[in-house]
Image 1: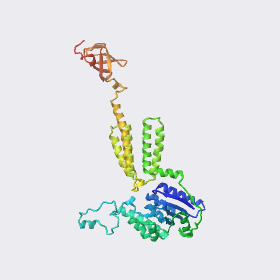
Image 2: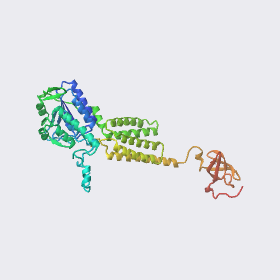
Image 3: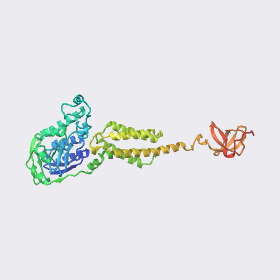
Image 4: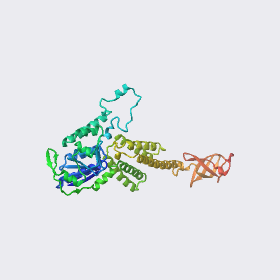
Length: 439
């Protein structure tokens, strides 16, 4: 007998683990696989993959909601219905299977905005559907009806209460373990794993087109834990971790291109960016959010390499923040990006851009160190002068110059312009007033 524990939100790591356990059961002479379940729900795609794995499993799958106080909400209810044996521990519950992550709640549910009491009866009648439990828009109706069809088909396979299953989807109803047993939603209540093994012994289960009888009494139980790869995937499939890895990767590459040859930022950045993209690939992405996120990053990179005095940088931070908020297309709390993380990343980006902007401004104000522009404002010494022209010595070179008449050899002047190979000079005010006479 194989036992594995599924705790927390249903996601990509859960799918990988269940697939691994069921593959392992093919190679082991096992009577059944027990999924010890405690979940608030999870991603719809992950739930459907697990259901598919259970339905084609070569050995019976027993889903056991435990320990006392655990629940199989939302996606957990579907998994319980899909299992060959559905069991619960005392003090547990299941239900609330409305697909809110896809279509939202039906009108009138807690948390929904109330109707305007000032609307007249005619307007209210026009807005109220014939069925008070009917979804309020086409997308919600589509998602709800699809979920109802799925859970009813699972109930029909194993002979469970399909009507209550539909109400769990349409009305988000929940049941305690005792109520679930009374309504034929589950097969049995077991206080612990030993009691479960005794109670399912001799029970017949439907395996495709055949029926098998379980013989579980007294069998040893082998616990199958998550392997290292699944644990890593569990961490990476957290959208907050994925976003942090992506930003670390992007900043690492920016610093590498900014300082070619540093190597370490480039290597770390490439690894983090690859892991971040892999993690996002496991999640239900909103491609508009992904596009905004990419646009924001592109603007920030452009600001780093083509300074626009903050215009591109600010636009990039705004686009990045909006894109990050929209990135994961689900209302499951465990798979939503934290607003605190978005704010922190935006502030970090703003700080980096502020440093880059300050550096850019200082660079533009800095005295040129090469080319003819570096001569502007330089101090020169008059070598010989006649009328308004002569020669000056500046930065180790003899230059032809033009300037005010009356300059004296050995006097100091300052370069204020360049005309081809001729310097335009003026008297240095530190040497007194500018000469006005000839000589």
